[in-house]
Image (cartoon, rainbow, N blue to C red; front, side, top):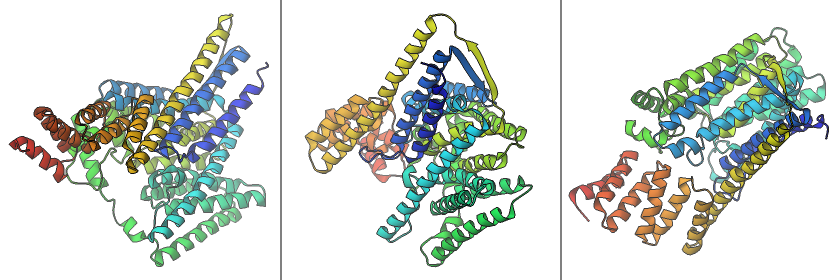
Length: 553
Protein backbone atom coordinates (compact mmCIF):
# COMPACT_ATOMS: atom_id res chain seq x y z
CA UNK A 1 0.00 0.00 0.00
CA UNK A 2 1.41 3.42 -0.96
CA UNK A 3 1.54 6.28 1.49
CA UNK A 4 -0.11 9.00 -0.56
CA UNK A 5 -3.82 8.38 0.26
CA UNK A 6 -3.34 8.48 4.04
CA UNK A 7 -2.86 12.25 4.47
CA UNK A 8 -6.04 12.89 2.48
CA UNK A 9 -7.95 10.29 4.49
CA UNK A 10 -6.66 11.89 7.69
CA UNK A 11 -7.80 15.35 6.57
CA UNK A 12 -11.26 14.19 5.53
CA UNK A 13 -11.66 12.23 8.74
CA UNK A 14 -10.85 15.39 10.68
CA UNK A 15 -13.36 17.41 8.66
CA UNK A 16 -16.09 14.83 9.15
CA UNK A 17 -15.43 14.68 12.88
CA UNK A 18 -15.46 18.46 13.21
CA UNK A 19 -18.74 18.68 11.33
CA UNK A 20 -20.38 16.07 13.58
CA UNK A 21 -19.06 17.31 16.94
CA UNK A 22 -21.48 20.24 17.49
CA UNK A 23 -24.39 18.28 16.04
CA UNK A 24 -23.93 15.07 18.02
CA UNK A 25 -27.18 14.21 19.81
CA UNK A 26 -28.74 10.92 20.85
CA UNK A 27 -32.34 10.48 21.95
CA UNK A 28 -31.88 7.03 23.49
CA UNK A 29 -29.37 7.97 26.20
CA UNK A 30 -30.18 9.69 29.49
CA UNK A 31 -27.74 12.48 28.63
CA UNK A 32 -28.91 13.53 25.17
CA UNK A 33 -26.46 16.37 24.56
CA UNK A 34 -23.07 16.16 26.27
CA UNK A 35 -22.21 12.46 26.39
CA UNK A 36 -22.71 11.93 22.61
CA UNK A 37 -20.26 14.75 21.87
CA UNK A 38 -17.75 13.33 24.33
CA UNK A 39 -17.92 9.95 22.62
CA UNK A 40 -17.61 11.47 19.12
CA UNK A 41 -14.54 13.40 20.30
CA UNK A 42 -12.96 10.21 21.65
CA UNK A 43 -13.57 8.42 18.37
CA UNK A 44 -12.10 11.39 16.50
CA UNK A 45 -8.97 11.51 18.67
CA UNK A 46 -8.27 7.79 18.51
CA UNK A 47 -9.10 7.65 14.80
CA UNK A 48 -6.70 10.51 14.06
CA UNK A 49 -4.05 8.77 16.17
CA UNK A 50 -4.48 5.54 14.21
CA UNK A 51 -4.21 7.39 10.90
CA UNK A 52 -1.17 9.35 12.10
CA UNK A 53 0.65 6.18 13.14
CA UNK A 54 -0.40 4.40 9.93
CA UNK A 55 0.94 7.31 7.87
CA UNK A 56 4.25 7.17 9.72
CA UNK A 57 4.59 3.42 9.19
CA UNK A 58 3.62 3.67 5.52
CA UNK A 59 6.10 6.46 4.82
CA UNK A 60 8.68 4.94 7.23
CA UNK A 61 9.08 8.46 8.61
CA UNK A 62 7.78 10.02 11.82
CA UNK A 63 6.94 13.68 11.08
CA UNK A 64 6.07 15.99 13.98
CA UNK A 65 4.88 19.58 13.52
CA UNK A 66 5.53 22.06 16.31
CA UNK A 67 3.41 25.03 17.38
CA UNK A 68 3.82 27.92 19.87
CA UNK A 69 1.17 26.26 22.06
CA UNK A 70 3.01 22.97 22.55
CA UNK A 71 4.94 23.93 25.69
CA UNK A 72 2.02 25.83 27.28
CA UNK A 73 -0.19 22.81 26.67
CA UNK A 74 2.36 20.50 28.29
CA UNK A 75 2.53 22.83 31.28
CA UNK A 76 -1.26 22.91 31.56
CA UNK A 77 -1.51 19.11 31.35
CA UNK A 78 1.21 18.75 33.98
CA UNK A 79 -0.71 21.13 36.23
CA UNK A 80 -3.91 19.14 35.71
CA UNK A 81 -2.08 15.93 36.55
CA UNK A 82 -0.61 17.45 39.71
CA UNK A 83 -3.97 18.77 40.87
CA UNK A 84 -5.49 15.34 40.18
CA UNK A 85 -3.00 13.75 42.59
CA UNK A 86 -4.11 16.13 45.35
CA UNK A 87 -7.78 16.31 44.35
CA UNK A 88 -10.70 16.37 46.75
CA UNK A 89 -11.98 13.34 44.87
CA UNK A 90 -9.61 11.66 42.44
CA UNK A 91 -12.28 9.76 40.52
CA UNK A 92 -14.03 13.05 39.74
CA UNK A 93 -10.68 14.65 38.89
CA UNK A 94 -9.99 11.95 36.32
CA UNK A 95 -13.42 11.44 34.74
CA UNK A 96 -15.41 14.51 35.76
CA UNK A 97 -18.93 14.97 37.05
CA UNK A 98 -21.83 13.47 35.07
CA UNK A 99 -23.00 15.78 32.26
CA UNK A 100 -19.84 17.90 32.68
CA UNK A 101 -17.05 15.33 32.20
CA UNK A 102 -14.42 18.03 32.77
CA UNK A 103 -11.85 15.77 34.36
CA UNK A 104 -8.27 15.05 33.35
CA UNK A 105 -9.42 12.71 30.58
CA UNK A 106 -11.32 15.53 28.89
CA UNK A 107 -8.39 17.94 29.29
CA UNK A 108 -6.18 15.36 27.55
CA UNK A 109 -8.84 15.06 24.85
CA UNK A 110 -8.70 18.82 24.22
CA UNK A 111 -4.92 18.68 23.90
CA UNK A 112 -5.06 15.62 21.64
CA UNK A 113 -7.63 17.21 19.35
CA UNK A 114 -5.43 20.27 19.01
CA UNK A 115 -2.17 18.39 18.45
CA UNK A 116 -3.53 15.76 16.07
CA UNK A 117 -5.39 18.43 14.08
CA UNK A 118 -2.11 20.29 13.66
CA UNK A 119 -0.45 17.11 12.41
CA UNK A 120 -3.25 16.49 9.90
CA UNK A 121 -3.41 20.03 8.46
CA UNK A 122 -1.41 20.87 5.38
CA UNK A 123 -0.95 24.62 5.31
CA UNK A 124 -3.22 27.66 5.23
CA UNK A 125 -5.39 26.42 2.38
CA UNK A 126 -6.27 23.21 4.20
CA UNK A 127 -6.93 25.24 7.37
CA UNK A 128 -9.34 27.48 5.46
CA UNK A 129 -11.26 24.42 4.27
CA UNK A 130 -11.47 23.15 7.83
CA UNK A 131 -12.83 26.50 9.06
CA UNK A 132 -15.48 26.36 6.35
CA UNK A 133 -16.51 22.92 7.56
CA UNK A 134 -16.84 24.38 11.06
CA UNK A 135 -18.95 27.21 9.66
CA UNK A 136 -21.19 24.78 7.77
CA UNK A 137 -21.73 22.72 10.90
CA UNK A 138 -22.43 25.88 12.89
CA UNK A 139 -24.96 27.05 10.34
CA UNK A 140 -26.92 23.82 10.74
CA UNK A 141 -26.62 24.11 14.53
CA UNK A 142 -27.99 27.67 14.32
CA UNK A 143 -30.95 26.62 12.16
CA UNK A 144 -31.87 23.84 14.57
CA UNK A 145 -31.48 26.19 17.54
CA UNK A 146 -33.80 28.80 15.99
CA UNK A 147 -36.41 26.14 15.27
CA UNK A 148 -36.08 24.80 18.82
CA UNK A 149 -36.42 28.27 20.38
CA UNK A 150 -39.45 29.24 18.30
CA UNK A 151 -41.18 25.87 18.76
CA UNK A 152 -40.60 25.76 22.52
CA UNK A 153 -41.63 29.41 22.92
CA UNK A 154 -44.92 28.84 21.11
CA UNK A 155 -45.61 25.68 23.10
CA UNK A 156 -44.86 27.27 26.48
CA UNK A 157 -46.28 30.71 25.81
CA UNK A 158 -43.03 32.38 26.89
CA UNK A 159 -39.67 33.08 25.32
CA UNK A 160 -37.39 30.03 25.58
CA UNK A 161 -33.70 30.66 24.86
CA UNK A 162 -32.07 28.83 21.99
CA UNK A 163 -29.83 25.95 23.02
CA UNK A 164 -30.19 23.60 20.05
CA UNK A 165 -27.95 20.56 19.86
CA UNK A 166 -25.48 22.02 22.38
CA UNK A 167 -27.99 21.67 25.20
CA UNK A 168 -27.39 24.96 27.04
CA UNK A 169 -27.78 28.59 25.96
CA UNK A 170 -24.39 29.90 27.11
CA UNK A 171 -22.59 26.95 25.55
CA UNK A 172 -24.38 27.57 22.26
CA UNK A 173 -23.71 31.29 22.60
CA UNK A 174 -19.96 30.72 22.95
CA UNK A 175 -19.96 28.52 19.86
CA UNK A 176 -21.97 30.96 17.74
CA UNK A 177 -19.92 33.96 18.89
CA UNK A 178 -16.87 32.09 17.62
CA UNK A 179 -18.51 31.63 14.22
CA UNK A 180 -19.74 35.16 13.53
CA UNK A 181 -16.32 36.61 12.56
CA UNK A 182 -15.67 33.59 10.35
CA UNK A 183 -18.97 34.14 8.53
CA UNK A 184 -18.15 37.82 8.11
CA UNK A 185 -14.75 36.93 6.66
CA UNK A 186 -16.35 34.59 4.13
CA UNK A 187 -18.66 37.44 3.09
CA UNK A 188 -15.97 40.05 2.50
CA UNK A 189 -13.62 37.53 0.87
CA UNK A 190 -16.20 35.97 -1.48
CA UNK A 191 -15.39 36.28 -5.19
CA UNK A 192 -18.84 35.53 -6.58
CA UNK A 193 -22.42 36.57 -5.89
CA UNK A 194 -23.31 32.99 -5.03
CA UNK A 195 -20.54 32.92 -2.43
CA UNK A 196 -21.63 36.28 -1.03
CA UNK A 197 -25.23 35.16 -0.71
CA UNK A 198 -24.18 31.97 1.07
CA UNK A 199 -21.96 33.89 3.48
CA UNK A 200 -24.63 36.57 4.02
CA UNK A 201 -27.18 33.88 4.80
CA UNK A 202 -24.77 32.20 7.23
CA UNK A 203 -24.01 35.49 9.00
CA UNK A 204 -27.71 36.39 9.36
CA UNK A 205 -28.81 32.96 10.59
CA UNK A 206 -25.92 32.54 13.02
CA UNK A 207 -26.43 36.10 14.27
CA UNK A 208 -30.12 35.53 14.88
CA UNK A 209 -29.47 32.26 16.70
CA UNK A 210 -26.81 33.99 18.80
CA UNK A 211 -29.31 36.62 19.87
CA UNK A 212 -31.94 34.02 20.70
CA UNK A 213 -29.55 32.37 23.16
CA UNK A 214 -29.96 35.46 25.41
CA UNK A 215 -26.39 34.76 26.46
CA UNK A 216 -25.09 38.15 27.54
CA UNK A 217 -21.54 36.84 27.78
CA UNK A 218 -21.72 35.62 24.18
CA UNK A 219 -23.19 38.95 23.03
CA UNK A 220 -20.27 40.74 24.69
CA UNK A 221 -17.81 38.37 23.06
CA UNK A 222 -19.33 38.92 19.62
CA UNK A 223 -19.31 42.70 20.13
CA UNK A 224 -15.62 42.78 21.03
CA UNK A 225 -14.88 40.47 18.10
CA UNK A 226 -16.50 43.05 15.82
CA UNK A 227 -14.15 45.69 17.24
CA UNK A 228 -11.17 43.45 16.43
CA UNK A 229 -12.39 42.93 12.87
CA UNK A 230 -12.91 46.63 12.29
CA UNK A 231 -9.52 47.46 13.80
CA UNK A 232 -7.81 45.04 11.45
CA UNK A 233 -9.63 46.15 8.31
CA UNK A 234 -7.57 48.52 6.17
CA UNK A 235 -9.05 48.23 2.70
CA UNK A 236 -12.66 47.34 3.36
CA UNK A 237 -14.83 46.50 0.37
CA UNK A 238 -17.74 48.85 1.09
CA UNK A 239 -20.26 46.93 -1.00
CA UNK A 240 -19.62 43.68 0.84
CA UNK A 241 -19.47 45.47 4.17
CA UNK A 242 -22.82 46.99 3.29
CA UNK A 243 -24.23 43.51 2.71
CA UNK A 244 -23.03 42.45 6.15
CA UNK A 245 -24.53 45.58 7.69
CA UNK A 246 -27.78 44.88 5.86
CA UNK A 247 -27.93 41.34 7.22
CA UNK A 248 -27.34 42.58 10.74
CA UNK A 249 -29.96 45.30 10.25
CA UNK A 250 -32.53 42.70 9.21
CA UNK A 251 -31.74 40.59 12.26
CA UNK A 252 -31.89 43.71 14.43
CA UNK A 253 -35.27 44.71 13.01
CA UNK A 254 -36.72 41.27 13.72
CA UNK A 255 -35.29 41.28 17.23
CA UNK A 256 -36.58 44.80 17.94
CA UNK A 257 -40.05 43.90 16.72
CA UNK A 258 -40.11 40.83 18.96
CA UNK A 259 -38.88 42.86 21.94
CA UNK A 260 -41.50 45.56 21.42
CA UNK A 261 -44.16 42.88 21.17
CA UNK A 262 -43.04 41.54 24.54
CA UNK A 263 -41.87 38.22 23.14
CA UNK A 264 -38.28 38.84 24.24
CA UNK A 265 -37.51 39.95 27.82
CA UNK A 266 -34.56 42.02 26.60
CA UNK A 267 -34.57 44.58 29.41
CA UNK A 268 -34.44 41.87 32.04
CA UNK A 269 -31.54 40.09 30.34
CA UNK A 270 -29.48 43.28 30.13
CA UNK A 271 -30.32 44.44 33.62
CA UNK A 272 -27.77 42.67 35.79
CA UNK A 273 -25.11 40.02 36.12
CA UNK A 274 -27.42 37.99 38.34
CA UNK A 275 -25.65 35.84 40.91
CA UNK A 276 -22.25 35.90 39.23
CA UNK A 277 -20.61 38.57 41.45
CA UNK A 278 -21.55 36.61 44.57
CA UNK A 279 -20.28 33.38 42.98
CA UNK A 280 -17.00 35.04 41.99
CA UNK A 281 -16.46 36.36 45.52
CA UNK A 282 -17.11 32.92 47.00
CA UNK A 283 -14.78 31.41 44.42
CA UNK A 284 -11.94 33.74 45.40
CA UNK A 285 -12.27 32.48 48.98
CA UNK A 286 -12.33 28.90 47.70
CA UNK A 287 -9.13 29.47 45.70
CA UNK A 288 -7.42 31.10 48.67
CA UNK A 289 -8.04 27.98 50.76
CA UNK A 290 -5.89 25.84 48.43
CA UNK A 291 -4.00 28.27 46.20
CA UNK A 292 -1.18 26.28 44.64
CA UNK A 293 -2.70 23.15 43.05
CA UNK A 294 -6.45 23.65 43.57
CA UNK A 295 -9.02 21.01 44.40
CA UNK A 296 -8.67 18.95 41.23
CA UNK A 297 -10.38 19.03 37.82
CA UNK A 298 -14.19 19.29 38.01
CA UNK A 299 -14.16 19.19 41.83
CA UNK A 300 -15.70 22.63 42.40
CA UNK A 301 -19.17 21.24 43.10
CA UNK A 302 -17.81 19.11 45.93
CA UNK A 303 -16.21 22.03 47.80
CA UNK A 304 -17.97 25.25 46.74
CA UNK A 305 -20.79 24.93 49.34
CA UNK A 306 -18.20 25.35 52.12
CA UNK A 307 -17.58 28.88 50.87
CA UNK A 308 -21.09 29.76 49.67
CA UNK A 309 -22.32 32.94 51.34
CA UNK A 310 -25.93 33.05 50.16
CA UNK A 311 -28.58 30.77 48.75
CA UNK A 312 -28.56 30.31 44.96
CA UNK A 313 -31.38 29.12 42.68
CA UNK A 314 -29.54 25.85 42.04
CA UNK A 315 -26.56 23.82 43.19
CA UNK A 316 -23.32 25.14 41.77
CA UNK A 317 -20.44 23.17 40.30
CA UNK A 318 -18.67 25.93 38.31
CA UNK A 319 -17.26 29.33 39.21
CA UNK A 320 -18.80 30.90 36.08
CA UNK A 321 -15.51 32.44 35.01
CA UNK A 322 -12.90 30.35 33.23
CA UNK A 323 -9.83 31.88 34.93
CA UNK A 324 -11.44 31.38 38.34
CA UNK A 325 -12.45 27.85 37.36
CA UNK A 326 -8.88 26.99 36.39
CA UNK A 327 -7.53 28.53 39.61
CA UNK A 328 -10.09 26.65 41.71
CA UNK A 329 -9.36 23.30 40.10
CA UNK A 330 -5.64 23.58 39.23
CA UNK A 331 -4.48 26.37 41.49
CA UNK A 332 -2.22 29.27 40.63
CA UNK A 333 0.12 26.84 38.89
CA UNK A 334 -2.64 25.92 36.47
CA UNK A 335 -3.70 29.55 36.09
CA UNK A 336 -0.13 30.48 35.11
CA UNK A 337 -0.09 27.73 32.47
CA UNK A 338 -3.49 28.90 31.23
CA UNK A 339 -2.23 32.47 30.96
CA UNK A 340 0.85 31.24 29.11
CA UNK A 341 -1.40 29.45 26.62
CA UNK A 342 -3.45 32.61 26.00
CA UNK A 343 -0.32 34.73 25.62
CA UNK A 344 1.23 32.26 23.18
CA UNK A 345 -1.87 32.35 21.00
CA UNK A 346 -1.96 36.17 20.98
CA UNK A 347 1.75 36.31 20.10
CA UNK A 348 1.25 33.80 17.29
CA UNK A 349 -1.52 35.99 15.87
CA UNK A 350 0.61 39.12 16.11
CA UNK A 351 3.45 37.49 14.22
CA UNK A 352 1.09 36.23 11.53
CA UNK A 353 -1.30 39.20 11.46
CA UNK A 354 -0.53 39.95 7.82
CA UNK A 355 -1.80 36.56 6.69
CA UNK A 356 -5.09 36.38 4.82
CA UNK A 357 -8.00 36.30 7.28
CA UNK A 358 -5.75 36.74 10.31
CA UNK A 359 -7.92 39.37 12.03
CA UNK A 360 -11.29 37.59 11.61
CA UNK A 361 -9.78 34.37 12.92
CA UNK A 362 -8.29 36.20 15.89
CA UNK A 363 -11.63 37.96 16.41
CA UNK A 364 -13.32 34.55 16.60
CA UNK A 365 -10.80 33.51 19.26
CA UNK A 366 -11.45 36.75 21.17
CA UNK A 367 -15.22 36.18 21.03
CA UNK A 368 -14.85 32.72 22.55
CA UNK A 369 -12.38 33.77 25.25
CA UNK A 370 -14.46 36.79 26.32
CA UNK A 371 -17.51 34.54 26.61
CA UNK A 372 -15.54 32.24 28.90
CA UNK A 373 -14.60 35.14 31.15
CA UNK A 374 -18.24 35.27 32.27
CA UNK A 375 -18.85 31.55 31.94
CA UNK A 376 -16.73 28.43 31.77
CA UNK A 377 -15.42 25.94 29.27
CA UNK A 378 -18.06 23.37 28.29
CA UNK A 379 -16.98 20.48 26.11
CA UNK A 380 -19.82 20.90 23.58
CA UNK A 381 -18.19 24.14 22.40
CA UNK A 382 -14.63 23.46 23.61
CA UNK A 383 -14.07 20.42 21.38
CA UNK A 384 -14.71 22.39 18.16
CA UNK A 385 -12.77 25.34 19.56
CA UNK A 386 -9.51 23.43 19.90
CA UNK A 387 -9.73 22.19 16.33
CA UNK A 388 -10.44 25.79 15.32
CA UNK A 389 -7.34 26.86 17.28
CA UNK A 390 -5.20 24.42 15.30
CA UNK A 391 -6.62 25.76 12.03
CA UNK A 392 -6.02 29.33 13.18
CA UNK A 393 -2.34 28.69 13.83
CA UNK A 394 -2.01 26.92 10.49
CA UNK A 395 -3.62 29.95 8.80
CA UNK A 396 -1.15 32.39 10.40
CA UNK A 397 1.88 30.27 9.59
CA UNK A 398 3.62 29.80 12.98
CA UNK A 399 3.51 26.01 12.74
CA UNK A 400 7.07 24.83 12.29
CA UNK A 401 7.78 22.51 9.35
CA UNK A 402 7.52 18.89 10.29
CA UNK A 403 10.68 17.43 11.74
CA UNK A 404 11.05 14.02 10.19
CA UNK A 405 12.80 11.03 11.66
CA UNK A 406 13.35 7.94 9.50
CA UNK A 407 11.92 4.79 10.99
CA UNK A 408 14.51 2.18 10.22
CA UNK A 409 14.49 -1.41 11.35
CA UNK A 410 11.94 -4.17 11.05
CA UNK A 411 10.40 -3.65 14.45
CA UNK A 412 8.70 -0.28 13.72
CA UNK A 413 5.74 -1.82 11.82
CA UNK A 414 5.16 -4.18 14.72
CA UNK A 415 5.21 -1.31 17.23
CA UNK A 416 2.89 0.71 15.03
CA UNK A 417 0.56 -2.24 14.72
CA UNK A 418 0.40 -2.61 18.48
CA UNK A 419 -0.36 1.11 18.87
CA UNK A 420 -3.08 0.94 16.22
CA UNK A 421 -4.65 -2.17 17.74
CA UNK A 422 -4.50 -0.65 21.21
CA UNK A 423 -6.07 2.60 20.03
CA UNK A 424 -8.84 0.69 18.24
CA UNK A 425 -9.57 -1.39 21.33
CA UNK A 426 -9.51 1.68 23.55
CA UNK A 427 -11.90 3.44 21.18
CA UNK A 428 -14.41 0.64 21.61
CA UNK A 429 -14.01 0.58 25.39
CA UNK A 430 -14.30 4.32 26.02
CA UNK A 431 -17.23 4.86 23.65
CA UNK A 432 -19.37 1.75 23.57
CA UNK A 433 -19.33 1.07 27.32
CA UNK A 434 -20.38 4.55 28.54
CA UNK A 435 -22.91 4.78 25.72
CA UNK A 436 -24.54 1.47 26.63
CA UNK A 437 -24.43 2.35 30.32
CA UNK A 438 -26.33 5.58 29.70
CA UNK A 439 -28.90 3.74 27.58
CA UNK A 440 -29.52 1.40 30.50
CA UNK A 441 -29.82 4.37 32.88
CA UNK A 442 -32.55 5.86 30.70
CA UNK A 443 -34.31 2.50 30.61
CA UNK A 444 -34.09 2.31 34.41
CA UNK A 445 -35.62 5.76 34.84
CA UNK A 446 -38.45 4.92 32.42
CA UNK A 447 -39.17 1.61 34.14
CA UNK A 448 -39.16 3.33 37.52
CA UNK A 449 -41.72 5.88 36.30
CA UNK A 450 -43.95 2.95 35.28
CA UNK A 451 -43.41 1.40 38.76
CA UNK A 452 -41.63 -1.60 37.22
CA UNK A 453 -39.10 -1.64 40.02
CA UNK A 454 -37.49 -5.01 39.30
CA UNK A 455 -36.87 -4.06 35.67
CA UNK A 456 -35.59 -0.68 36.72
CA UNK A 457 -33.21 -2.27 39.23
CA UNK A 458 -31.83 -4.67 36.62
CA UNK A 459 -31.28 -1.84 34.14
CA UNK A 460 -29.54 0.32 36.74
CA UNK A 461 -27.32 -2.57 37.79
CA UNK A 462 -26.34 -3.10 34.16
CA UNK A 463 -25.44 0.58 33.79
CA UNK A 464 -23.32 0.39 36.95
CA UNK A 465 -21.58 -2.75 35.70
CA UNK A 466 -20.77 -1.31 32.27
CA UNK A 467 -19.31 1.98 33.52
CA UNK A 468 -18.49 1.65 37.24
CA UNK A 469 -16.64 5.00 37.49
CA UNK A 470 -19.88 7.01 37.21
CA UNK A 471 -21.57 7.95 40.49
CA UNK A 472 -24.97 8.71 38.90
CA UNK A 473 -25.48 5.04 38.12
CA UNK A 474 -24.79 4.09 41.73
CA UNK A 475 -27.20 6.82 42.85
CA UNK A 476 -29.96 5.34 40.69
CA UNK A 477 -29.45 1.92 42.28
CA UNK A 478 -29.61 3.54 45.70
CA UNK A 479 -32.80 5.44 44.86
CA UNK A 480 -34.52 2.28 43.63
CA UNK A 481 -33.53 0.39 46.77
CA UNK A 482 -34.69 3.33 48.89
CA UNK A 483 -38.11 3.20 47.21
CA UNK A 484 -38.38 -0.49 48.16
CA UNK A 485 -37.32 0.26 51.79
CA UNK A 486 -34.28 -1.96 51.19
CA UNK A 487 -32.08 0.08 53.52
CA UNK A 488 -29.02 -2.14 53.33
CA UNK A 489 -28.88 -2.07 49.51
CA UNK A 490 -29.62 1.65 49.47
CA UNK A 491 -26.84 2.31 51.97
CA UNK A 492 -24.31 0.31 49.95
CA UNK A 493 -25.18 2.09 46.69
CA UNK A 494 -25.18 5.57 48.23
CA UNK A 495 -21.83 4.95 49.86
CA UNK A 496 -20.44 3.85 46.50
CA UNK A 497 -21.78 7.03 44.93
CA UNK A 498 -20.22 9.16 47.67
CA UNK A 499 -16.87 7.48 47.17
CA UNK A 500 -17.02 8.03 43.40
CA UNK A 501 -17.93 11.68 43.99
CA UNK A 502 -21.25 13.51 44.04
CA UNK A 503 -22.33 16.96 45.17
CA UNK A 504 -26.00 15.98 45.39
CA UNK A 505 -27.08 16.54 49.02
CA UNK A 506 -30.10 14.25 48.55
CA UNK A 507 -27.71 11.29 48.26
CA UNK A 508 -26.33 12.00 51.73
CA UNK A 509 -29.77 12.75 53.18
CA UNK A 510 -31.12 9.43 51.95
CA UNK A 511 -27.96 7.72 53.18
CA UNK A 512 -28.53 9.23 56.62
CA UNK A 513 -32.10 7.95 56.65
CA UNK A 514 -30.99 4.47 55.57
CA UNK A 515 -28.30 4.46 58.27
CA UNK A 516 -30.86 5.53 60.88
CA UNK A 517 -33.28 2.77 59.94
CA UNK A 518 -30.42 0.26 60.11
CA UNK A 519 -29.56 1.48 63.60
CA UNK A 520 -26.29 3.11 62.50
CA UNK A 521 -26.79 6.43 64.23
CA UNK A 522 -23.24 7.75 64.21
CA UNK A 523 -22.86 6.95 60.49
CA UNK A 524 -26.25 8.50 59.85
CA UNK A 525 -25.30 11.68 61.66
CA UNK A 526 -22.10 11.94 59.60
CA UNK A 527 -24.12 11.58 56.39
CA UNK A 528 -26.62 14.19 57.60
CA UNK A 529 -23.77 16.60 58.31
CA UNK A 530 -22.47 16.06 54.78
CA UNK A 531 -25.93 16.84 53.36
CA UNK A 532 -25.94 20.11 55.34
CA UNK A 533 -22.41 20.89 54.16
CA UNK A 534 -23.50 20.54 50.52
CA UNK A 535 -26.71 22.57 50.99
CA UNK A 536 -27.13 24.22 54.37
CA UNK A 537 -29.94 26.40 52.96
CA UNK A 538 -32.29 23.41 52.59
CA UNK A 539 -34.44 23.21 55.75
CA UNK A 540 -34.93 19.46 55.21
CA UNK A 541 -31.19 18.90 55.59
CA UNK A 542 -31.06 21.04 58.72
CA UNK A 543 -34.08 19.31 60.23
CA UNK A 544 -32.63 15.84 59.67
CA UNK A 545 -29.32 16.77 61.28
CA UNK A 546 -31.20 18.28 64.22
CA UNK A 547 -33.00 14.97 64.74
CA UNK A 548 -29.69 13.15 65.03
CA UNK A 549 -28.22 15.76 67.36
CA UNK A 550 -31.12 15.62 69.80
CA UNK A 551 -31.51 11.86 69.48
CA UNK A 552 -34.97 12.06 67.95
CA UNK A 553 -36.62 9.35 65.85
